[in-house]
Image (cartoon, rainbow, N blue to C red; front, side, top):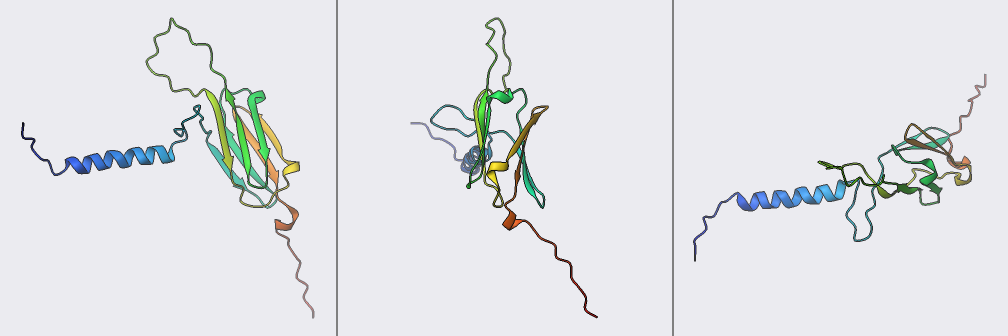
Length: 147
C-alpha cells in the first residue's frame, strides 16, 4: 500500500474542471443529446415598432434545406447542412465545419401575425420578418389644446 500525498488544491481544481464542463454544456450552441447530433445557428433578434426581425447565421447552407415556421410559442428554424463526401485520401488535422441537422426555436417578445411572415436568404444570412399584431403596436395620438 502506497501513501499518496494530499494536495489541498487538487479538489478545488477538480471542482473547477467540473464547473467548466457544466458551463460549456449549458452555453454551447451544440448541445449534447442522446439522439442524432443537432446544432443551433447563431441568431440576432431585433424589434421595431411594426415587426420582429430575426437573423440566423447559416453559411454554406442551401436555402432549400431550411424550414421556417412561426407559431404562437415562437419562431422555429430547422434544416440540414449537407456534408461534402469525405475524401479518404485527405489527412484531416482538424474538422470544425458543422454538418447535419440544425434547429433553433426562439420565443418571440410579442404577439405577431404569423401568416404575414417573410423570409429572405442572402450571403449565408437568413432574415425573417414577422409583423406585430395590431393590438400590440404603439399608437401616437395628437393632443389638442383648447384655448
